[in-house]
Length: 152
Image (cartoon, rainbow, N blue to C red):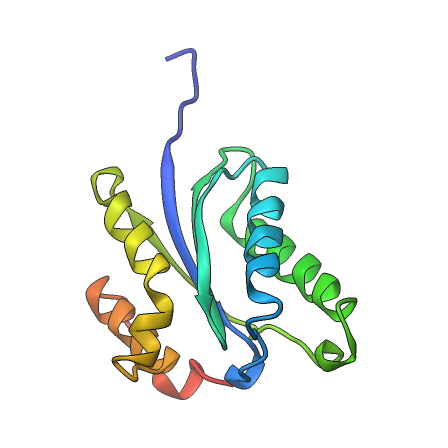
């Protein structure tokens, strides 16, 4: 086969360090746009970006030119530096060290987009924490884990 073809959608999620509620209403839309821009710059077409006060969700088409670990490194590094320029209230902004990355079936893209769009309601109305949401993803995707090492 003379061509190398790839079409891999991923759903990425990670939180602020210690799940601090630092993503407030005054910055969140600009942050979502910034994160999407980082993905786009790395040729990882953003499908949907969103989240809540202490975490983000990114659904994107992973470029065949970059590894997922490099994508995450660039997203977290550049956005952490960027948000610190947005005011003194963000001077101690950091992302958690880890992340979750899950494959998305192309036929399920609309479901993932809606899930990301509904984050505010999901966390406020259902009173669901990032921790319980993340553990549900790990169980859904049958990812073995040791809870002693998930949280920082």
